[in-house]
Length: 296
Image (cartoon, rainbow, N blue to C red; front, side):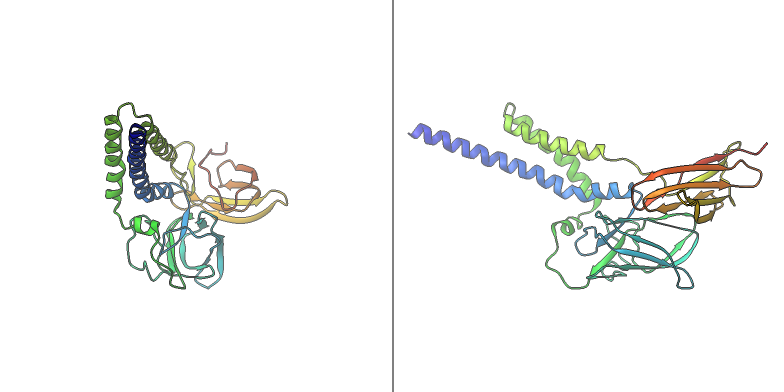
């Protein structure tokens, strides 16, 4: 009986020990996750609308850009991940962000830095210096005071350097612990799960394409300005938008699901037509690097 009790006690201690070890690994992954999310955001090609208190993305936020005369020139709606992007020509704009229960511009993050949302748009004014898509991260304040800070917002209080250190040195410590346990299969199984999660994070690090297309001279490789680029809806052959490339040769269109073509023209060069026969994604970026050949 005593022997059986001792065995049960040893099993219970082992379970507790491995539970603490699993919690240690979970804590490393939890505390280092915001810096990983920030890395992905920077390479997503989108801006994020997020709750300034909790750091959580907010969907169905309507983003409107008004020109100098107060006319709405572009509109976008954030998706389930809070993502949006808007393509506009060079100029100065007023930004409006509307969602029930939230206020913009953010008073909480006005003139403040945020360790995990760089490239913020804390004010309602934005100056666009070239063609391309606006991918500013937009904080919006809850209109009503909420409960205490969430786990996510508490993690945001840690610096990026500290999070990188936690992820790197925490993993080394976790590996050293499992090595000391040698043939303990449970410890190795726990570490294997953690290791696979970290590997999955690293494999998801894919850089986004630039948020614009560039028109170049095929012979010289230099960007071409004053090239006329038209966005055409294929079904009715209707011109939806026209842009003239900047000194950097850039242009960009953001479209809804549909069928499109881009027509690129400049006197003395051969016309280029790029077809997009089946766009299924809302907020899709139509922008491709092309090289124009001189007409014979």
